[in-house]
Amino acid sequence: MRTDIDPRNLIGRKAFDRNGTRIGTIDEVYLDDATGEPEWAAIRTGLFSRDAFVPLEPSELIDGALHVPFDRALIKDAPDFGVGRHLSPEQELQLYHHYGLDVTAPPPLADRDFGKLAGTDETA
Image (cartoon, rainbow, N blue to C red):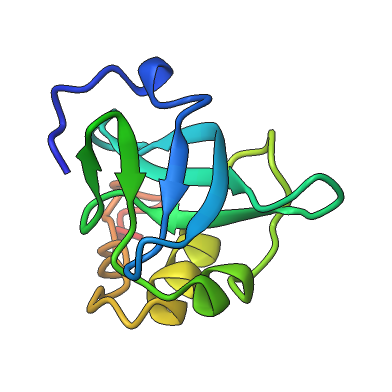
C-alpha cells in the first residue's frame, strides 16, 4: 500500500476482500512503532461484530476503498486483541502468521557490558 496516504483519511472508508465482498468499514489505523508508517487497519465487520485487524502492506486503496487480498472468512477469524490499545510485537507476529505473511521475530537484544562492578576490579 502507498505509505504517503494520511492514515486519518483511511478511517471511515469501506473495505473489501479479495473477491470484492464488503468486509466492513475502517475504524482505526495502527502505525508501526519504529517507522510511524500505517501498518494495520481495524475493520468493523458488522453492527454487532468486533473489529478485525488486517495488514495494510499487501492491501491497496482503489477508488477510495481498501481492497484486502484475503478472504472474508480469514479476516473475520483473525485474532481479536480489541481496538483502542497498542498492539504488542507478539500480537503483531500472531496477526502476520494468521495471514500467512513471512515475518520473523526481531533478533534478541545483545548482551551489554556495563563496565566494572562497584568496589571490584572485575567487569560485569
